[in-house]
Image (cartoon, rainbow, N blue to C red; front, side, top):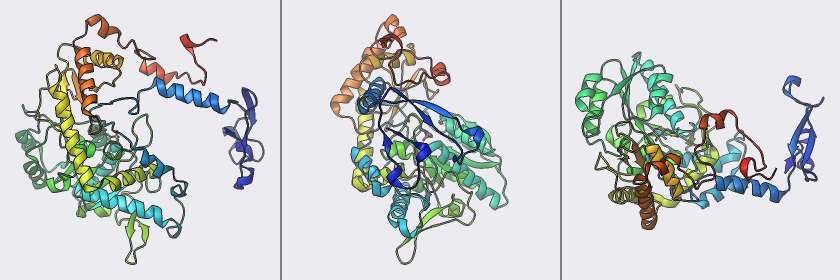
Length: 478
Ligand SMILES: *Cc1c(COP(=O)(O)O)cnc(C)c1O
């Protein structure tokens, strides 16, 4: 359906869809009544005009060309592609939930209550004292968290210049520290794949603003020395930042706050089952300990003495990192998911995530150099090319894991089956891993051969996208 933008008024009566009559229609836009500057408007815009079945077929065809968690297992290590329960979509689609964020607090108590409830849930889960829901992704949460660390040090008149990050960390950690204006000090791993305590002791100084860490780390190993790590950083006057991408391993069992972390982000779209990927909206709430709450982004939501909810600005807020309270439709799904599972359900999810990773790894013919691991593991494709093995896995109807990262494992296949897969699916996944890993060189080099598209030039696809509602190329009759 195409809406006539030019005739849009706030009067709903006039906001009628135009019915498609032919394959193309020309819309008159702009004109003297347009509120937009003339140089930004066009006189005419030619749009395809399609019937509903044609449109439905277009999107259904596109969805079948792409892989999704609804079509099969998706064991993308560190990215955590888990099931997005359909009931959370219903909650988000409730028209009563979709109110304009500029509405007064008085007329949006229900929504503010949900945001407050989610702040409280996340604080409890992470062992933090206060949470902001504003950052729109994990990376944005990191950036927010490190800006909070900077504001804290600056406020105390204690300017610091360095952030310490393990070599195995996610690329966004390095980017975050650099964007916040810090020099990055890279920390090597010890032989077992964990933080090298001696190297950490040598690296901390009066210049240390923070150490960024995920636990379990990016090869799924729990940092057993976390208490000593925290003490080392705190003794030097630094803060401990927790990258929450791997919270799935700890959910309901261990809390970053109890381990000594001062700031953390939650990848709501990895841990709390809201959709993920494709550049779509996400959420990366940030939790902090008491000493840091006054620096959180504004506004936050609080409960007043008479039980109503209101928004307020923390005293020394770093400002805004996103519009309004954050990505509401993502946040309400996270709230619904946590509320439905409860503490027992969340602890059960982490237990199954760890069990599934271990059950899967046990059946692989590939080596897994580091362990014991938790919710994910990094297998090595050895003398095979991990990307080729991954491409071949697609031919067996499963999505491959993350490849070639982290670099401490050569030809890494970082695998996270998540808690949602059945024993049967895990066995099917293992069979696909093993068949691809042991396939002939010729087959691997030309794989995949059973998918809609084979090896795509990703740069060209991004630079010169062919956007059409019609089938193009070999399969086209035109
Ligand atoms: C995914 C991920 C991030 C970044 O999160 P986004 O939500 O994708 O921005 C950071 N660290 C780790 C370890 C991750 O896996």
